[in-house]
Length: 231
Image 1: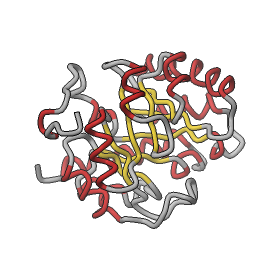
Image 2: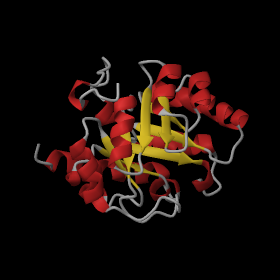
Image 3: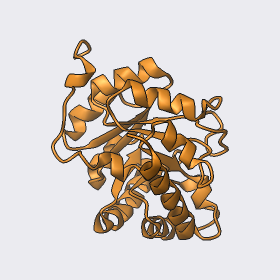
Image 4: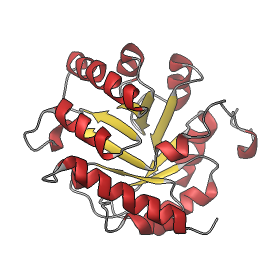
């Protein structure tokens, strides 16, 4: 499939709303909960208006991640929110999640697609444009690109590429691109204006005094930016 032109990639029925769901994408990083209950935070994020949530628990064992995923999935499903598991293809499958988000050091996208099937949503965080292109050709449905700005949540993310760097990937490839890294309600508009379909955040909302309100404010900023962007 490596030689297939990008404009003839697989199109899965029912994916037309994926970009919309990814507009406000909250990463439930268990190391960024500020002492709060994971389920309480998940509920607040969903109530605030997130279209997608991702469970990220880098230091938890598989059993812990699976238990958490099985608790969050029905909350997300009831609200029509896309639920993604970070890294763990096995947990995503066992928990019945909507999909998985992978990075350069995780199981290859093509293998994840083979295991999870055609209906799973597979996201990927590329290191560069060539990596992004390979992931899309292998079956990735969306890309998480950044860091748009400096971020403390993922200190190994590398130097900030700015909204322009996010937009360059969005213009080059035919899948939704989500900006990530140091994004908040005040700077999200620049990332959307550059070409991203949405923004992914963690600390900007998880560390806020009122998580639900922080998500709501971010959603307002994203909607305003999307409505003001010239097609």
